[in-house]
Image 1 (cartoon, rainbow, N blue to C red):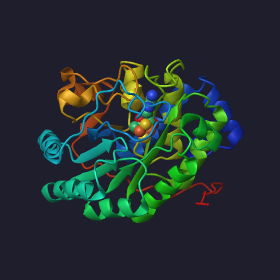
Image 2 (image 1 turned 60 degrees about the horizontal axis):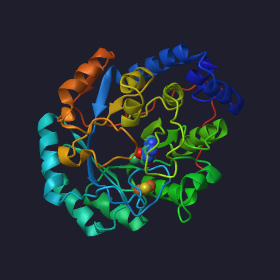
Image 3 (image 1 turned 60 degrees about the vertical axis):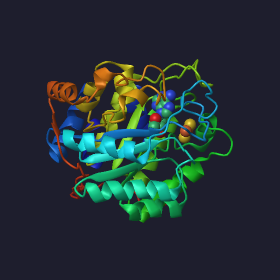
Image 4 (image 1 turned 90 degrees about the vertical axis):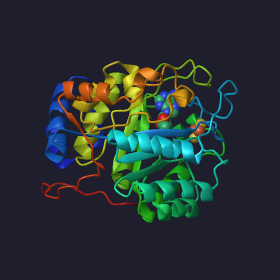
Length: 355
Ligand code: 5AD
Ligand code: FES
C-alpha cells in the first residue's frame, strides 16, 4: 500500500482507511515520506516568523480558546508599530517569512491591514508576507494581495459538512470556508490549508474527505495538528487527538503531496515534547516559531498548555536549530517557497481536477 501511495500519490479509499487505522506500517511510511521530502527539499527546514497580532475574535468555534465567548481571556491587540518591531527583530534573526495571524477581529479595517502589509512589503522586499486572518470577502483578500501579501493560511478544519457543523456555531459553514479558499487561490495567493486531527466527532471517513478535498485544492502548505482541549470551551472534556495518528497523516500527506510545505506544528510540540522533531521525521519541512512580543504570547492560547509562550522561547532560534539538527535536518534562512511538483508520473496515475 505504501509503495503504491508513493508511486501514485494516491490510494483508493479502502486502502487509505486501512492505512489510517493501523500503526503497523508507520516505520515504512515514514521512511518513504522522508525519501520524498529529501528528493524535494533535501534536509532543509524552512522557518516562518509567527506574529500573533490580535487575540480578539468575533467567532465562537467550539474548539478554540480565543473564541468570543471565552470571557476569561485577557484580550490584546498589537499596533502597526509593534508589528513592525516584531518584523525588524525577526529579520535580524534571519526570518524571511512573516506570518500575521489573528482572530477575526473587526477592529482592523481592510485599509489598516493593507497599510501594515504595504509597510512590511516596502521595508522587506526579499520576504514573503503571509496572512492568517480568517474568512474575508474576495475584495478584502484582493486588497491585501495588492498591498503585497503573498500567502494566506486558512485551515478548512474538516471537509465533512456535518462534522464542520458540529465544530462551529450556526452561521459558519464549510461552504463559506471553501469559497474563501478558492477565492484566495484565484487571486494568486500561495494558499495554506489543513485540519485538526482527533477533533471531537471526527471519523476516518472525515479524514479521507480531508485528503480528497486537499487533492482538489492543491494548496502550497498543509498544516495539521492534534486537537487539544481548551478548558474554557464547550469541548473541554474531549480527549486530545492522537499523536501517532497525526504523524501518520503527515507521512501520508508527504506521499500524496510530495512538494507540499508541511509544518511541524506547535500543537504537535504541545502534545509531546519531541512532537515537532517526530513531525519532521514523518515528512514535515517547516517550523513556525513565535515572533510575538513575549508579554502577549501566553494570551494567544488556542488550547491548554500551548508551548513556547514564556520567555524561555525568547527568540527560539538557538534551541530550535539544535533540535532540528538533532532530528537530522537543517534550518535554512530562506524565503522558503514551495518547490515545483515533478510531473513524471506512472501510467496508472489519474490526476484529480478541481470540480
Ligand atoms: N486544538 C488544536 N488546534 C486548534 N486550533 C484551534 N483550536 C485548537 C485546539 N483546541 C487550530 C485550528 C486553527 C489553527 C490556527 O489552530 O485548526 O485553524
Ligand atoms: Fe476565532 Fe474560530 S474562534 S475563528
